[in-house]
Length: 433
Ligand code: UGA
Image 1 (cartoon, helix red, strand yellow):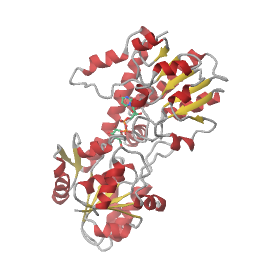
Image 2 (spheres, rainbow, N blue to C red; image 1 turned 90 degrees about the horizontal axis):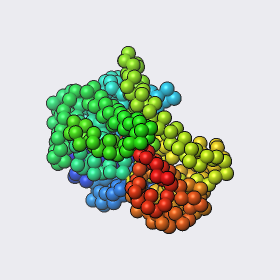
Image 3 (spheres, rainbow, N blue to C red; image 1 turned 180 degrees about the vertical axis):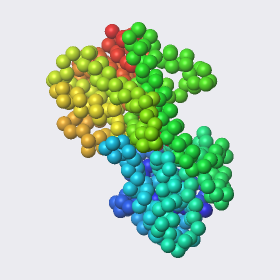
Image 4 (cartoon, helix red, strand yellow; image 1 turned 60 degrees about the horizontal axis):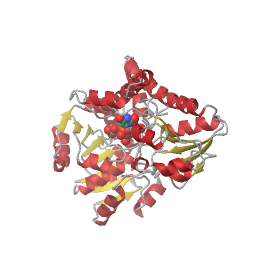
């Protein structure tokens, strides 16, 4: 099938590349000329395991091309995926200017039937708006359908998530749209749920909100565990063995970050309010997430006492492992707050250093964890990269000024830390002193 992807950000690039890998002819477009220039040279703007190789393979096979020009992309394609960004406005509402713009362009350049698929995360009822917009500007009255096909890709494992999804959700209004999308996704042999457009849009918001709720729930439990000396990992395990609960997304830590959950939760609270529903549950989820970061700061202060003039080594800047994404990463807030209190900060992340350099000032960027730890008063773990789980902890202990580790991701075994002689503070588990 001939497909165009409008917006070559994270979702657009992964979707376009994977659809090309399934044998379709895909044109990925973006209004950012530099991004397209880079992509044409094989330079991928994001770090996502496997993506660069897959792009190269499909470009070589002539199934995937990059272009800044939207008109030929629209005219050559039967299916058009809208994957432009929907950033948050100051009040949390999603900014849909990009979506509206694309809808107008599609209407303007249409030269026959088009299936317009919204894949960006958008508020419920956006499908209707897209349809109305195309209707207004579609002067030649070409036939078209609008569909919603939310993405459930996780950064760091997006290609695997695309190729082996738990489910595919298709929100449609016509048999033609249904048949086209069922045919497109047939090679994935995944469960496909066909719904109306509004339900599909809501599934995405509900799924991300539920994931955030699980995280905030276990983080709240971690607070209780700390107060009574219980172990949150054991509690999570005991809960997760119940199949109705499941053990995924029950890792206590320093709160969720990234470009999706925080933004989507804000947007969903906002949409609900507009619809006349006060989503108090989600407001609490967001509040617990903020408090978890503050609580972690308090832990650092409790254990270092005075922050002024202390050297603190931060391991991990990305909002989670296997990505270089630092958007809404807890690390950024934490580093800035520690700097405000007068700490000297050394940081190391296996992938996110370049992106962090644009955001963090007055910080020493180190070549590895050992350099960060050298002569530091404490080591703080923010991201659970595998590399940190495999550190030579004896060496770390030797180079630290004090053997103090504050772990926001519970990556080490407490018994082992005790044997090694560390003071070890983690989340929702008894301290090792
Ligand atoms: C999330 C969803 O998981 C995807 O299904 C969805 O498609 C995507 O948003 C999106 O809307 O585009 P992502 O933001 O890549 O994916 O990251 P997650 O793996 O969900 O992690 C989010 C945050 O929660 C991270 O900061 C992570 O460290 C934290 N987390 C996750 C926890 O603190 N505890 C957990 O048990 C799991």
